[in-house]
Image (cartoon, rainbow, N blue to C red; front, side, top):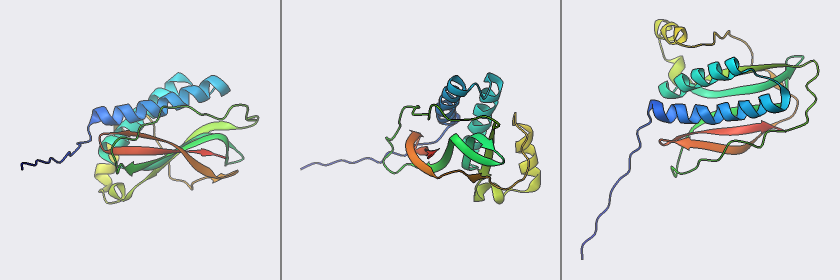
Length: 167
């Protein structure tokens, strides 16, 4: 009796990072269609920034959406970086909340980096930041007018980002 087995080992590449970031950009385009923001340049910059963060493995989470008085309101979406266990989870973008009251609210984002980022030297961090289209500043993670609930997972190359929407 003959048997055989093999091991599949996915290597995460810039192509995978671009693919995942494009899913987030599709969500942002839906937010734009329903609420008029963010603009195309912002979406392009967010997509490029996320591609770099994913490629280098520095992302813990990133939130995009509207804030009123410094508090996230609907529609806001949060993406958290994870390792895929089964390797084949990849939802389609969508399911953006429609009809939220965004009067007196501003669109923005908030980035949380991970321990891999924390362990870098300041010189490496500074060099990485110069490659990004968005210059971020230190600050406290805004509170939310509700809670974030996981609703989609975008996966590629053995890595994924879980999307949570504000409820």
